[in-house]
Image 1: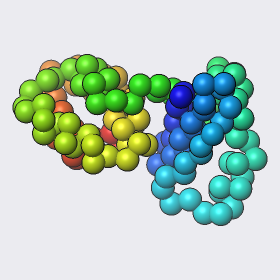
Image 2: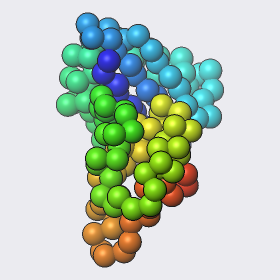
Image 3: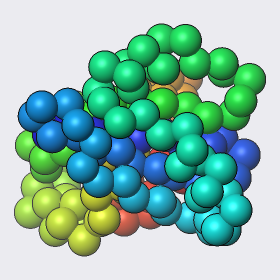
Image 4: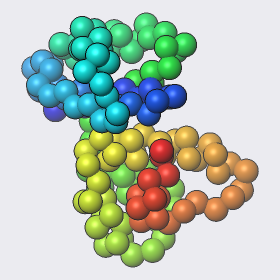
Length: 138
Protein backbone atom coordinates (compact mmCIF):
# COMPACT_ATOMS: atom_id res chain seq x y z
CA UNK A 1 0.00 0.00 0.00
CA UNK A 2 1.25 3.49 -0.88
CA UNK A 3 0.27 6.31 1.41
CA UNK A 4 0.31 10.02 0.66
CA UNK A 5 -0.55 12.85 3.01
CA UNK A 6 -1.61 16.40 2.22
CA UNK A 7 -1.61 19.07 4.91
CA UNK A 8 -2.71 22.67 4.67
CA UNK A 9 -0.12 24.92 6.28
CA UNK A 10 -2.51 27.54 7.68
CA UNK A 11 -5.56 25.52 8.71
CA UNK A 12 -3.88 22.23 9.68
CA UNK A 13 -6.41 20.26 7.64
CA UNK A 14 -5.05 16.86 6.60
CA UNK A 15 -5.99 14.33 3.96
CA UNK A 16 -4.53 10.83 3.86
CA UNK A 17 -4.65 8.96 0.54
CA UNK A 18 -4.15 5.19 0.58
CA UNK A 19 -3.59 3.36 -2.72
CA UNK A 20 -3.53 -0.41 -3.20
CA UNK A 21 -0.75 -2.36 -4.93
CA UNK A 22 -2.45 -1.79 -8.30
CA UNK A 23 -2.23 1.98 -7.79
CA UNK A 24 -5.96 2.51 -7.21
CA UNK A 25 -7.23 4.80 -4.44
CA UNK A 26 -8.81 2.64 -1.75
CA UNK A 27 -9.13 4.92 1.25
CA UNK A 28 -9.40 8.65 1.82
CA UNK A 29 -9.26 10.07 5.35
CA UNK A 30 -9.99 13.65 6.38
CA UNK A 31 -8.53 14.91 9.67
CA UNK A 32 -9.26 18.28 11.23
CA UNK A 33 -12.20 20.73 11.25
CA UNK A 34 -13.55 19.88 7.80
CA UNK A 35 -16.92 21.18 6.63
CA UNK A 36 -19.13 19.45 4.07
CA UNK A 37 -18.40 22.22 1.56
CA UNK A 38 -14.62 21.87 1.94
CA UNK A 39 -14.79 18.09 1.60
CA UNK A 40 -16.94 18.40 -1.52
CA UNK A 41 -14.53 20.91 -3.08
CA UNK A 42 -11.45 18.79 -2.36
CA UNK A 43 -13.13 15.52 -3.37
CA UNK A 44 -13.72 16.90 -6.85
CA UNK A 45 -9.92 17.13 -7.29
CA UNK A 46 -8.90 13.80 -5.75
CA UNK A 47 -6.63 11.69 -7.92
CA UNK A 48 -7.70 8.07 -8.29
CA UNK A 49 -4.29 6.52 -9.12
CA UNK A 50 -0.78 6.74 -7.73
CA UNK A 51 0.53 7.87 -11.13
CA UNK A 52 -1.88 10.80 -11.11
CA UNK A 53 -0.89 11.64 -7.51
CA UNK A 54 2.82 11.60 -8.34
CA UNK A 55 2.17 13.79 -11.36
CA UNK A 56 0.18 16.23 -9.24
CA UNK A 57 2.98 16.37 -6.67
CA UNK A 58 5.52 17.28 -9.38
CA UNK A 59 3.39 20.10 -10.79
CA UNK A 60 1.95 21.25 -7.46
CA UNK A 61 1.56 25.00 -6.91
CA UNK A 62 3.28 25.74 -3.58
CA UNK A 63 1.32 28.97 -3.14
CA UNK A 64 -1.86 26.93 -2.54
CA UNK A 65 -0.81 26.30 1.04
CA UNK A 66 -0.97 22.51 0.68
CA UNK A 67 2.06 20.31 1.29
CA UNK A 68 2.09 16.80 -0.24
CA UNK A 69 4.36 13.94 0.79
CA UNK A 70 4.58 10.19 0.38
CA UNK A 71 5.25 7.85 3.23
CA UNK A 72 5.03 4.16 2.47
CA UNK A 73 6.58 2.70 5.61
CA UNK A 74 4.57 3.84 8.61
CA UNK A 75 5.99 1.35 11.07
CA UNK A 76 7.55 1.98 14.45
CA UNK A 77 10.85 0.64 13.16
CA UNK A 78 10.85 3.17 10.29
CA UNK A 79 10.23 5.99 12.76
CA UNK A 80 12.87 4.81 15.21
CA UNK A 81 15.50 4.32 12.49
CA UNK A 82 14.93 7.86 11.22
CA UNK A 83 14.73 9.66 14.57
CA UNK A 84 18.14 11.26 15.28
CA UNK A 85 18.25 10.93 19.09
CA UNK A 86 17.66 7.44 20.38
CA UNK A 87 17.51 8.01 24.15
CA UNK A 88 15.12 6.82 26.80
CA UNK A 89 13.43 3.44 26.96
CA UNK A 90 12.52 2.18 23.50
CA UNK A 91 9.47 0.47 24.99
CA UNK A 92 8.02 3.84 26.10
CA UNK A 93 8.58 5.25 22.64
CA UNK A 94 6.84 2.27 21.05
CA UNK A 95 3.94 2.61 23.50
CA UNK A 96 3.53 6.29 22.54
CA UNK A 97 3.72 5.31 18.85
CA UNK A 98 0.97 2.72 19.20
CA UNK A 99 -1.40 5.33 20.68
CA UNK A 100 -1.19 7.55 17.57
CA UNK A 101 -3.68 7.44 14.69
CA UNK A 102 -2.29 6.63 11.23
CA UNK A 103 -2.32 10.26 10.05
CA UNK A 104 -0.24 11.36 13.05
CA UNK A 105 2.21 8.51 12.49
CA UNK A 106 2.73 9.73 8.94
CA UNK A 107 3.22 13.31 10.07
CA UNK A 108 5.59 12.27 12.86
CA UNK A 109 7.87 10.53 10.37
CA UNK A 110 7.62 13.26 7.74
CA UNK A 111 8.41 16.06 10.23
CA UNK A 112 11.70 14.52 11.38
CA UNK A 113 13.63 16.16 8.50
CA UNK A 114 12.23 19.55 9.49
CA UNK A 115 13.07 18.87 13.14
CA UNK A 116 16.68 18.18 12.17
CA UNK A 117 16.78 21.54 10.35
CA UNK A 118 15.26 23.32 13.35
CA UNK A 119 17.79 21.77 15.72
CA UNK A 120 20.80 22.61 13.52
CA UNK A 121 21.47 25.54 15.86
CA UNK A 122 22.70 23.10 18.52
CA UNK A 123 19.61 22.92 20.72
CA UNK A 124 18.73 19.51 22.10
CA UNK A 125 16.37 17.05 20.46
CA UNK A 126 13.42 15.87 22.53
CA UNK A 127 13.40 12.25 23.60
CA UNK A 128 11.56 10.22 20.94
CA UNK A 129 8.72 9.35 23.36
CA UNK A 130 8.33 13.04 24.24
CA UNK A 131 8.34 13.97 20.55
CA UNK A 132 5.44 11.56 20.00
CA UNK A 133 3.47 12.31 23.17
CA UNK A 134 3.64 16.09 22.73
CA UNK A 135 3.09 15.88 18.96
CA UNK A 136 5.98 18.19 18.04
CA UNK A 137 5.02 18.10 14.34
CA UNK A 138 1.90 20.21 14.96
